[in-house]
Amino acid sequence: MYATSYHRASSVEEAVQLRSAHEEGKYLSGGMTLISTMKQRLAAPSDLVDLRHIPALRGISIEGRRVKIGAATPHADVAASQELRALCPAICDLASHIGDPHVRQMGTIGGSIANNDPAADYPAGLLGLGATIVTDRRSISADDFFVGLFETALEEGEMVTAVLFDAPEKAGYAKFNNPASRFAMTGVFVAKTASGVRVAVTGAGSDGVFRHPGLEQALTSSWSADALANVSVDPSSLLSDLHANAEYRANLVKVMAKRAVAAAG
Amino acid sequence: MTRTIHLSLDINGKQHELDVEPRVTLLDALRESLALTGTKKGCDQGQCGACTCHVDGKRVLSCLTLAAQVEGRQITTIEGIAAEGGDLHPVQAAFIENDAFQCGYCTPGQIMSAVACIREGHAGSEEEIREYMSGNLCRCGAYNSIVAAVREAAEMAATGVAAKDKAEVA
Image (cartoon, rainbow over all chains, first blue to last red; front, side, top):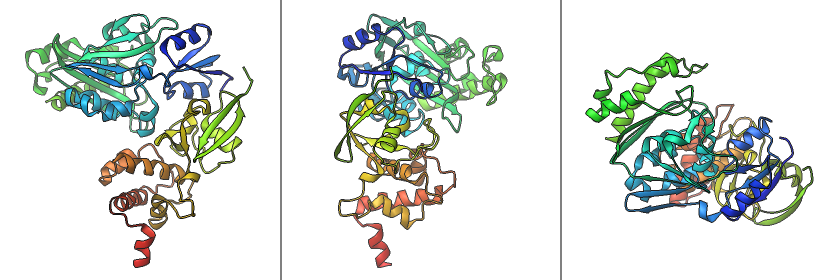
């Protein structure tokens, strides 16, 4: 790891100020990707601004069916929240299968979506739920937030502070994970929301998380796994790597979508 | 940027003062600066779990945590879980009782993870233990004995009978 400096922010304002004072600085949340990347010398921020000591960024609050999750809330807290489980069990189940128990204690929802790993789970969950991502300066819809591989709509120095969503009528998530890393080789989140059915796919797209209109239309006509039987998934925009080729992933998208619908009930 | 910073870390109930570079991980601080070498460096990239410690009672990977991040937190390492009189922690006793290791390198991490796994309430069945111990690899493949040790320690925690007492009775 290259040398760096460490700053601990105690408020969002302080964090943004510290970050803007260091052009080559980075926000540090759980660090489960960033520190590993720094160790491999693939990232070399001059300064780290630690966000995990900002009370306002942590915790889950629920008003009616409106859910707000603070950006520095670790996956383990989302997985264990009984209040959230009562409204949207799919997002708790998704969080409970990220990485391993150690990673879930440190890794945070804000860090995960800001990193936007093409095989991460939360991007599918938030895109599937039609969530809103709140930053220190604006609100961004999930449809606009996830731009490409490790790329988001966040501007230089912009920081995710929370995610907001309305609990869906039904939702489910299923992933076929890489047995070693637990990253999704393909993961599908399905949700029946007030504004319609949404299906988001992670781990499979060559440009990161995406919605699948064909699967959405089929589930809009009939919310059942059988309704997906005749939907075709085009492999031409899917990833091929040593774990699975695009055709195999195309098949996984359908299989995981069916399982997600079954999980949603 | 290569300057050192002063940290005051609460480790196993004692305050430790150290001067380290900001990039130093908790794992390296423990091993290199404080001579607490019970915490092991396996992969050093967050995959094997050999470096598992507790921060405020939660299990974390000390290789992916900077020492600076945990200043002001309560850190517990394998050196800090036995009773003051020297009696082994029930999970340590259960690992010996069940021969839950071969080379022993992953064992401190396995034990720290197991203590947290039981405390979290995720040791109810063999399947649950395997899932919630999945962050700790054992390249000798002592998994069956590790699972047995965790089960036994979990049962002991529930019933209050220590493994060594059970052994003496037997």
